[in-house]
Image (cartoon, rainbow, N blue to C red; front, side, top):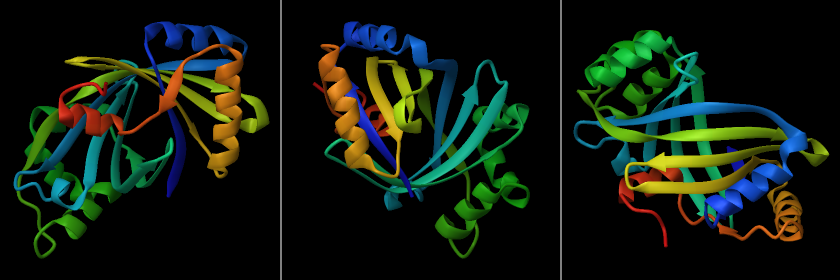
Amino acid sequence: MEVEVKLRLSDAGAHQRLSDALVPHHLRTHLQENLFFDGAAGELSSRFAVLRIRFYDADSRCVISLKAKARLAGGVSRVEEDEEDIDSALGRACAAEPWRLADLAGSSRIMRRVVEEFGSEGKMGSFVCLGGFRNVRAIYGWKEGLMLELDETQYDFGTSYELECETIDPERTKELLERFLKENGIPYSYSEASKFAVFRAGKLLP
């Protein structure tokens, strides 16, 4: 179970102010491209599961992941997540021709799970690509060993800004982050939907 604190920033100005405040803690920045897939009959989405391929930094890395049973309340996200690295060229081939995902069941733990858990009698028909979005993620090594992720997510219909932090103590982490944001005059709210949910809705939250 992955547990994260997710705080939504009001606009680009708030994102810039937070980025400036975190400069001493900056470790690296990734350019991510996220693509999502489902079975042709909606086998995953009908059971609230998400299959994603993520490309990092001009295809220097590619990760396939399966998420399920996501819950988001009070700025705290809980989701079952499994992920593994795959060859970037293979990931691109699957993005161009989603039917190739089924062929990965023999070599990919994730795709084997998808076929066995969401297919019919252990078999999965064709896959479809739902599209996706790009994300600029800056990573910071912050206090108490916390790793912060500052996101600028670029959808076809607009851009959103978010601060995330994976943690084993979400209430304590949320308290620390909220105090830091208030001390630096950065407006925020609790995230109410995942990036995937926003993407599927086709519009930014008000």
